[in-house]
Image (cartoon, rainbow, N blue to C red; front, side):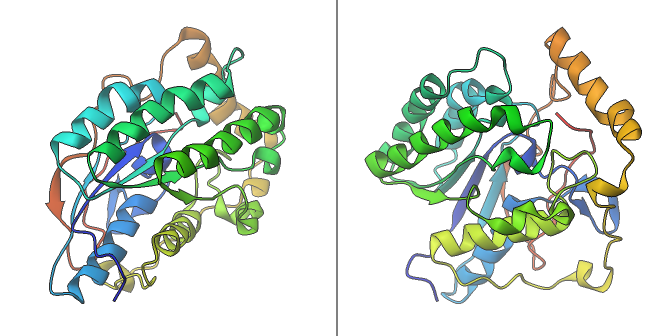
Length: 275
């Protein structure tokens, strides 16, 4: 049994935490994601102490730091969680005028509010973008932002989910064909690292989906560049130019805490493309 047993977990962020590209077995129109998988791990840990976990996922694709601070964190506080995960910043850093120091300062105000409520905060940094040629130009600002994340965690006594330093995420198989979102394998790995950061023994609880192993997505290097440009890159650029997002008009997939099912992955989701 872990030293700390959590009973109400709320996940905040964008499409990575919403779980895009991690299809739920037997439910083609639903996503799981690392946060949903972490909720299952936490629930298994809580059951060792005779308790259980309630889980809410407030993440929405395309969201930015301002959305988390102004909307998701106030919503989370109303739910009175004892654990909140925050993974955000990728969409902000891809803006031409992005200031990583200013963005981090804005995020810190929200983290401080969460910590003042007494909740444990699991604060994720940004993936190292060197794995994708089209993201390499943002590597410097991502590194500056991550340096700030460590300072925020120190000052606000948050737990860091360090994804920058995980070498396994350099494997193309960890990423979906859009080269932006994690594959199912990537989400599983991230959930394991999150559990480790929290000091919770990692053991994904088996359930109905264990009998059906989903077909692994094609590694990014198997998708022809021309196809990737047409299906993913060009539509994404067009949305950025129009200042629109696939998350516009969407609400969170799980706004009210629910008991985690025996499988830990019974959370409903919605289908959608890259943010």
